[in-house]
Amino acid sequence: MTPVPVFDPVVHAPGRLQICAILSAADEAEFAMMRDTLQVSDSVLSKHLKALEEAGYIKLRKAAAEGRQRTWGSLTAAGRAAFASHVAELQRLAGMVPRA
Amino acid sequence: MSQDPNPHEALAAIRDARSGLVPAADYPIAYDIAYGAVCALLVAGQGMPQPWSFVVLPVALGGLAGLVMWWRKKFGWWVSGYSPKRARWVAFGLLAVFVGLIGLSLYGRYVGPWWLFIVSGAIGFVAAIVGSRIWLAVWRKELAEGPE
Image (cartoon, rainbow over all chains, first blue to last red; front, top):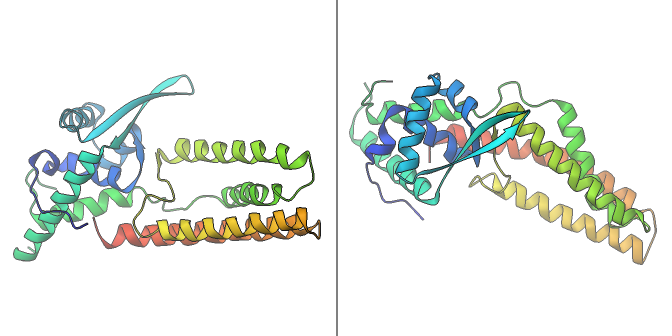
């Protein structure tokens, strides 16, 4: 089904947009992988993840690996739908705005 | 990227973020061999004489779980073969091949010849490696073509 284009300010913030991009392409991604891909600090990433979690767009879980706690994130159904709608809106707008 | 990206910048940022998912250097050939071996065991095991058909199944499933754990640890992400919109059809195709090969193994076990499980296992080994590489190529193309 084609998503309805809707601009979502929660998703649109640069860091959150890229987190959603990663999580929409994978089932699950680990904190360090997202931090390294986005090239942001732990605290900045945590802030973005918290905002997305509070919006109900992502689910975070802790998993022990080699004696350390690691955080894994995944998009919820609501997050997947919000991201798809936001991307549809970006594409609609991109069709109206010429490239710089 | 600016704090308030225009649509073109935002779409480019999505593509950039996703490019980090696809390992540039690819995964090692040992992963292909291990995955092929696990799939070969899964399809061939059904045609093996008792008690091997029972012994092989948990070994193969354990191997599969080990491969998933290795991947998660190495790359920090996981995607099921059935999740991506286009690449999932490669996974469904591979599943159909495996079901057919399991049928071949069972045919050999109950009708004969007894060695059919070796043939189905060998085909399963090659099909798993070729299929997973095709899946990766389709998934990469899917990620590169659009941010949907």
